[in-house]
Length: 372
Ligand SMILES: CC(C)(COP(=O)(O)OP(=O)(O)OC[C@H]1O[C@@H](n2cnc3c(N)ncnc32)[C@H](O)[C@@H]1OP(=O)(O)O)[C@@H](O)C(=O)NCCC(=O)NCCS
Image (cartoon, rainbow, N blue to C red; front, side):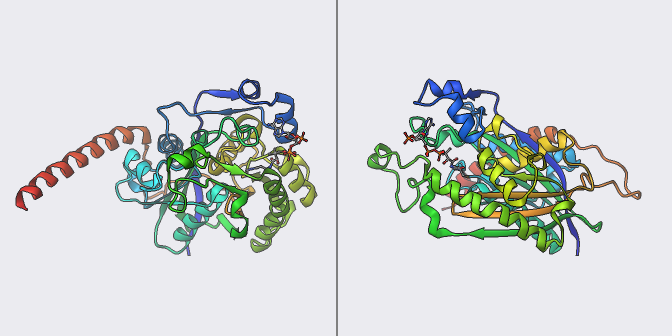
């Protein structure tokens, strides 16, 4: 059975930054309150021309460059987003088109902020089963478009950004070792976007009532998160036959510094075992774990051979954890010539391809109309 290695990683955040002081001009809040209750100092906000797919493409191309893998070699793209571009088509299909992943099947997974762990696990399982070799997983968010900027309970928490992993099959042991996934739909009300689905379709009334914004019972979510995080880490470690002492770094979902502190206390670990960057990005939902992982790698908090744990929680309610033995890009087999992939060039190819396909579809439509 092949092993599923994480061989590429990338992140992208939009340039504009919104600080706590900026927020204090918009709602009744202040920098000190936000920092003390959440640990957040600032967050990035997408420009009008940026969308979940465009952010996701930037992160994906960086991940493919690290893995030295061409988009055309991908078999599978899974995108996970709490702020998808549309209900359908899947944001994964938009990313597939924009990077020119000509042979990849693409779909979205919805598990709110736990989506990245669930998606990496699904990609890893597809690789482990032998049905595919190369997968791309993207977590991408433009949450700023579904936030009520007059609600101080939620607007201080979230930020925009994207992160991506490439997963590849290899006979060498390592990569994703274990994962646990949990859900409790009885807590669906605690964190939701009530409007825009088929239960509450968009009407003037739903717009007026703010149903198209994130609704959250902050205290309930806080209690839930602190209850499940440490336990999920222990479960994933047990299933991998690993001990806490073996772990070099825990990368938690970045929602609130205090939630991570509570998990550290539960696990009796010092805070420096946890990668934390919520101060600079806020809660970027599905993108937070890959963004934190990329920074942990940049800061040498994760090195090849290290055992790493990812842990997340979010709306649904959902939560989960995953253990990984970090390897990095796969070496080129001695029998093969070393190739150099420049995935950015594929973006141009993808644009031309997409345009040609659209033109062909038009022509085909015109011709078939004549036939009818
Ligand atoms: C949202 C959250 C930061 C609120 O912190 P809290 O300590 O629970 O704060 P409370 O809601 O009890 O509010 C305490 C006080 O601060 C006030 N307050 C709330 N938001 C405020 C803000 N942005 N600025 C200033 N004051 C604020 C409240 O009105 C309340 O005032 P009162 O005591 O006079 O009634 C916290 O509950 C949380 O982080 N929950 C988890 C949310 C989360 O992670 N969601 C995403 C999960 S993926």
